[in-house]
Image (cartoon, rainbow, N blue to C red; front, side):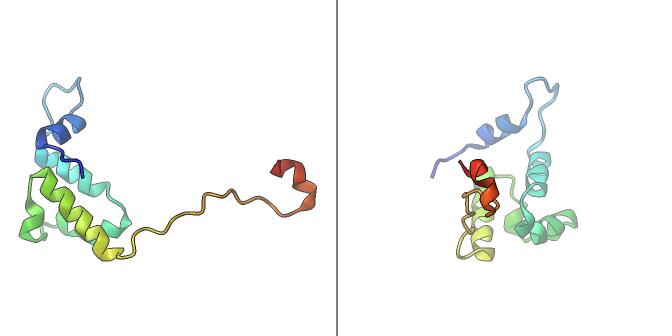
Amino acid sequence: MKHFSNETVDNYYNCLEAEEPTSTKSTICHFISTLGSEFEAIQNNYRIGNLPPEWRTQDWPTLLVLCHNYSHSVNPQGFAKRDSTPQYPSNNGDRAYHH
């Protein structure tokens, strides 16, 4: 697992043209709000200030581990693989479309 420092993550979110860097707290807020639907409970509790103490961190590696662990707790089998095979109509008249 690659280790990212706080500075690396902060630099990712800070625009080069920005006059003032974005605060870590603001960046974490934005990050949590963009997580998928399986994080809805975390997002709602973040909004109302009702997260457990370990989720109130401003340390990126800690936050990423928490997100990873939470994701695996709600999806213990992992994410289902999507079938990447294109679905085409089975009509023989569309045979040229298949090739």
